[in-house]
Amino acid sequence: MNWVRAVASDFGGNPPSPRSGHTAVNVGKSMVVIFGGLVERRFINDVVVYDTENKLWFTPECTGSSSDGQVGPPSRAFHVAVAIECNMFVFGGRQGGKRLGDFWMLDTDSWQWSELTSYGDLPSPRDFAAASAIGNRKIVMYGGWDGKKWLSDVHVLDTISLEWTELSISGSLPAPRCGHTATMVEKRLLIFGGRGGGGPIMGDLWALKGLIEEENETPGWTQLKLPGQSPSPRCGHTVTSGGHYLLLFGGHGTGGWLSRYDIYHNECIVLDRVSVQWKRLSSGSDPPPARAYHSMSSVGQRYLLFGGFDGKSTFGDIWWLAPEDDPILKRVSNSPRSNPRHNKTAALSSKGEQEREESPLLELQRNMEISIPATLARVNVVDELQDEELLELASSMSTGVPDEAAIKALKEHWRKSMSSSICLRELGPLLRVYQRLIIRHYQDNGNSWGQTHPFFHLRDANQLRLDDVSRLLEEFKRLLPE
Image 1 (cartoon, rainbow, N blue to C red):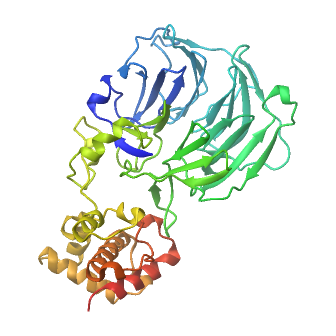
Image 2 (cartoon, rainbow, N blue to C red):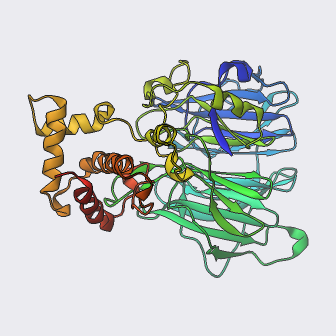
């Protein structure tokens, strides 16, 4: 599988505006319906549809009024949306500081909204819950945040009778949480991750049985501990079904060695339903910028990534994740490479795609005609004088001197430092300087290079653990010329 950023020629019509906290559901075999979201503290309630057969974005003219006279549901984000046949059901979410508990249905044949009056064990207003379809009639929803506490209740909705049932479950239970995912896989509901009571971000995987009436099973949770490279704890991620895989992408967690700092992810991890294990998805191209509260939809053999938030910017970019033989990937191999830095302002605009500079290792491989492992060749380390974070740090520590001299002084500072004195803001620049030293070492030593250098493959210093910092500093000092 490979990533490629979508361009205007990939489809017609007007793509959705930037947002996060929206929903995107597959309706039938030919539509992805996007609803709501948040951008710049503004909650929205528009509907934008991608017609997968005609490769066309369009905004349907919806009908159906709410109690205040506006068409469709009030604006919201962090709600749940589930498709059952031609209908999209929407529950809850947030508008400003208010948690919502209203329930809506959009008929995609007529594009008519209806506010539904349901009965039974009604779920309380909440946001950041997760839900999934059970067959072609029922919906199961788990957890969320009601503004005061994290929730762990399980509600099942019959979309024909509009009756909610809260399941009574005994035995081991997952911790209450929000911002998790819930995915129905055959007869079980799988939930992963989320933020829990007291604020910790989790990376546990649970399976719920007893949702299929015909099975006559007593509802019960089982924690699954699968082999392989399991995802790190996170919330705001997506899990998308595709073939015999579940594809997990993005999300945010607490990172590195200082847990109060959020980090955002952009790696793909698959749960292989055949071998029943986690696997890191190897992609031969640069991934999209890290993000959370995006949407990821299955479109044929491709996946469609849209929107999200990285702690600073709201994204409006669209990306394809496509198999190796997909014709859309040909333009990646044929396209020139230029700017290595991602301009987040462009994520909120309609500017063209910014492509990345060729990896120094790929250039090295071409010039020296030596073999470099593919996993290392994909690492992209910018030149020192283009490393804005390094230049800013060096300038702040050595004011009034040229950039080269400031960087030299910073390296000397690191040579004399103990790991306990390294500040958090120094880790990213230190990691990249170390990676550049490895490349220089490769140039000087050719095939005598040892492929065991730790941390070379890391894209982000937030992937470092506390006990990694000391070793990183030692390796840096070992490689730094006298």
